[in-house]
Image (cartoon, rainbow, N blue to C red; front, side, top):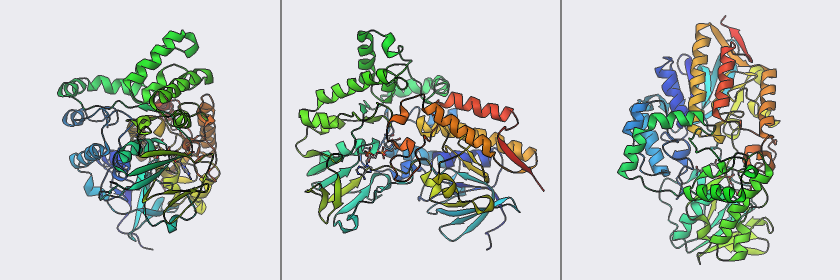
Length: 537
Ligand code: NAP
């Protein structure tokens, strides 16, 4: 098989926030010859695909943005506290134009397969347009939440209405006005889309399997004075967020729950609830590490649900009781619970009475058909491993990454995989990625990789891969850290529990970006401990 042209230095998979930053740094700072292969017709990744009504980030925009260029900070204006998808996409597009990234991105193309060739120490990369590219480094920026999960529910093909997934929302306007809509799923996506659909649908039926905890976002437009204020404080905002575990500056919690008086606990929860957003999880120092502390915060939220939802039965059905608060990703919303006071909204519990099948005209729940013109799947993703496992990646001796990860995802420092030389998995399993501000996670991983590639080049090293023992040790460490928290007590996508047959394993590194960065830097300072290097022939 012939490859098009000589081997490039790097192929990057995906032109979301990770792929764009990787391209910029590899091309502009290391002078590498890089091509990015992107499935969408433009940059933006998650923000290109997730166009559903209500889509906005649950991290405030002044944090959910690149930190690498103070001039970019000053020239871009975030119009809202939590900017909506179109503005985040416009920001990605602005970044692409500002740093001239598009010329090195192939849009509308997916990577279908990649094979390591030990003789030439290159990857051979196959793309959906039939092209074959050769490269020294294969950098996956395929994202953590980009492989949509459409559950295999019997009868779906028979449905005569429209089927939508929040993560693959059509680019043309979707008319939901006056239609009967069924939404399956009440995670972050469902909780955002439900209030918006309720405003226009003739009737909305929410099919809820597990109620989730959500905190009001308290989104608001930025006044000119807010803009002037945050722009003047960017250096401080950036340094505080880099020092914080979540990559977002947060007011320190007042203490451990049971070191506080009941009045102090209540005050902390009321203050953070009023401020809005996922920083609610910092009501106590030990919300995520002590079940009793967690239960106090969880009950506070349940009380807010009971206070908001007028029908007591509906309120109880919306109260999460099966998992600690925060053990599934905490959601943020605008008027989620209020939506269930509307006449045109029905909540159906599909845990006690499961979905049996989809019919021509709706969804059969037990023996009752929920009539629908549109079914919206807000059913999430095959997270963290799905995007790369969907590509046929073959390493040493034809080893398949999909097969390797089928018994447990392994990636040393979340970025390198034993048996897959010169493959780098940005925000991969075992890195803070989705458990922190993902843009900060991306920048840390890319910056570290750039230093590493420079070292490899200077040392005349042709190939590197994770040492098997170091990789195994890292997976154990990531798992042990998770077990110091309440995270493992929920059937969450963090654990792969939402995908049938996926091994149950806590995927992200949960101790935060500063400690992760320290480990990565100490590995580098120690001559890249845990990596196996092959010198150039
Ligand atoms: P998700 O959190 O995995 O939620 C999927 C929902 O679909 C759950 O309620 C799940 O129920 C339900 N579900 C799945 N399969 C089902 C089936 N066969 N029958 C009935 N219900 C089913 O997915 P997501 O809401 O798309 O969010 C994924 C992640 O993306 C978030 O956690 C967040 O990190 C990110 N996200 C962020 C934002 C934001 O920044 N605001 C917005 C959207 C997404 P069970 O819980 O019972 O499995």
